[in-house]
Length: 349
Image (cartoon, rainbow, N blue to C red; front, side, top):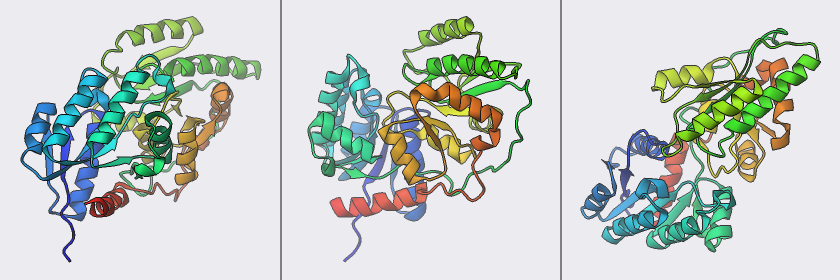
């Protein structure tokens, strides 16, 4: 029997959005494995509905923030797409308790996403548990296909000598600025770490947090709040703003201690960004980070959220610990993730 045809890979939204960018990378990996793969990029939901009416089967990556200005509008939009074609979806940014006031509305929207789709993928076992805990559906009702890295091995592998007593202490956080991303906690921890180092006889010449990336839409005022907090704690805050790929690469590979201190992560591309640049980030302990540490051994240092200052001190003393060891595998890669999707699409066709 001939293999089932692939669904058309529908990319909805601005190319620079993290979910859209990952969807594009994955679609390109699928096409590399199967030249017949059809990739359709549209700027908005209206374009997605129009495209869906022209095909018998499609796959789309979904987050409520891409599909509408409110959770309700996003659910309406996805239902419009699903009514036009057989639709498989990958869910991103699943609802969880840290959403606060919008939680109930996001839960209702994501439940509608799942019911509208013919088949559903999430990117981690953690997210499958969120489906069960918040959407009331069995975790086994969704497939789990982890995010893939662009490279099987890190691009860089370099050793760093121990710091001198006056070398700066700089924490690096990659990705958009938004509440709960960990910038405020990193500022506090850097200040506490410098105080600890000074009590030990070292005197870092600079205490800084570098936010590698821009501000998430709607959160522009957060930068002013972070700057005020940094000034109060004697920490320099540098916000790079949006960077092109080469500038982003330089920042991730540069001087400083990589930190991923998300308070409500469901899946994180920025963790993979660190690894792909040969970095071993400090990652706050969570069900998701423990799963990822087991999936890619040796690629991160998982820490308790209350211990960030101590971890920064340790990393300042031994900066080589923030670089991946030679030969560290970053699998699964986008190529293997694409293969997993192809097998899944065949199973649910």
